[in-house]
Length: 71
Image (cartoon, rainbow, N blue to C red; front, side, top):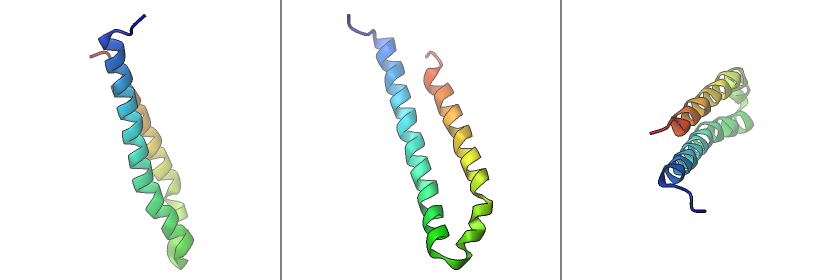
């Protein structure tokens, strides 16, 4: 049985949301982790990491809601 165009559209939105979140997570986390690891003052950035992770979690929830809402 072939999936309908609505199901394939929903699946493509979900894949797009996942790819967007992964791109944002890498773009935000990679520089922060590099700074924490390589700079003496980078350890102070550990204080903002819970806020960054919380922001990424909120972004993931919003993207999932966008991907699952019927068009």
